[in-house]
Length: 231
Image 1 (cartoon, rainbow, N blue to C red):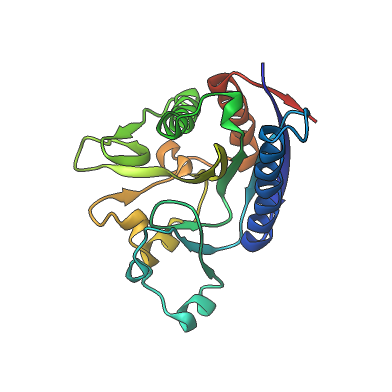
Image 2 (cartoon, rainbow, N blue to C red):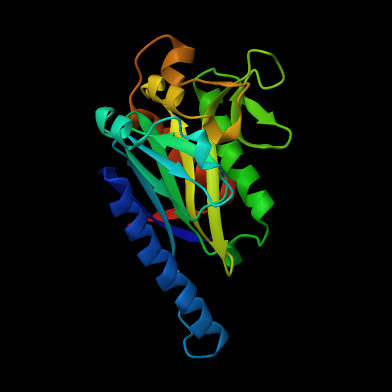
């Protein structure tokens, strides 16, 4: 059974977390090259980072900058930052109350299939929501997790965007637990104009904490991928 090193980074600036991811990601990729060249026989390690971010909008490589509806002055007024980043997907929002998960996995320890990897991340969130009695699903052709995905009332509760190189992953999940959903009005989320966003708090009609949901999602991801955690 593969092992994964778990770290809870708490509330952390997006750029700081991105730089930390990049450091682990690059180190893992470099180590894989050494393994393939016969320069090492020590296996690569897998990591998973849980955190929250202050208000920030991020645009993926395939995104459209016009999907951010704020100018630089408005970003400052909303105490938010904006970054163009190297994951797939379009624009999304992160902020307090959203559970962000960054798996930095060497998929050679699991399976070398990015589409399957995305479906496994989605399934972990779907199972977490089911734990709380919230029914959710995928929408054909759209990455992420949705409530009423096949209805006019469809609303997104989790965005997913990843990068991979040599089967090493980074970036990951943005799961709305108790997010300030008003910030989504400043973007066209993931470039999708005709669907709303929601949170667990809104769906449940009661308060719920990121720390509580983190423990459930942490367990569901381990079960889905078939790994154990290590300190």
